[in-house]
Length: 149
Image (cartoon, rainbow, N blue to C red; front, side, top):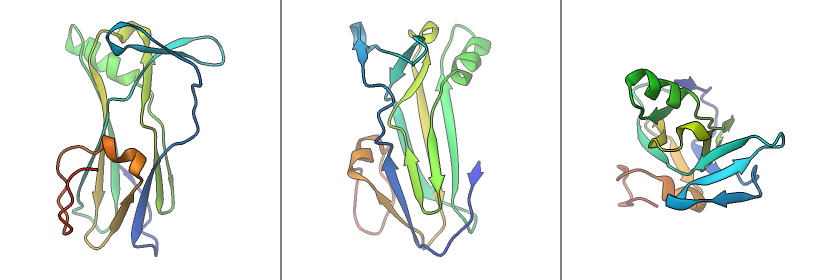
């Protein structure tokens, strides 16, 4: 779990990383998207990212990033999950999340996803940028009657 200092700000702001790392992509059959890095290496790009928000049992926020993959065996699934590259930045009260991840093309036929678990203490507010609304997972308990997005 990644933890950060509880600063004076009572609102955590969540934004989508707007710096496009891959300006050119190729989409193949079954929505398989391939990208190349500056060295010409090809990777699979996927937007199967989900954000879960829950009440923290601690006095400060906590963040865990789970990389989940399948494979022909448990060993292969663990290897596939470890090869997922997902980027996020935490700067004081601003959490910047990518809305995609990349992995080697060799795992292209396996369902994979990134799950972001954010635990917030009572009294901490959260602002979620509209661009990240599609990545919210399930209903999030709140006192405003909001449901996803």
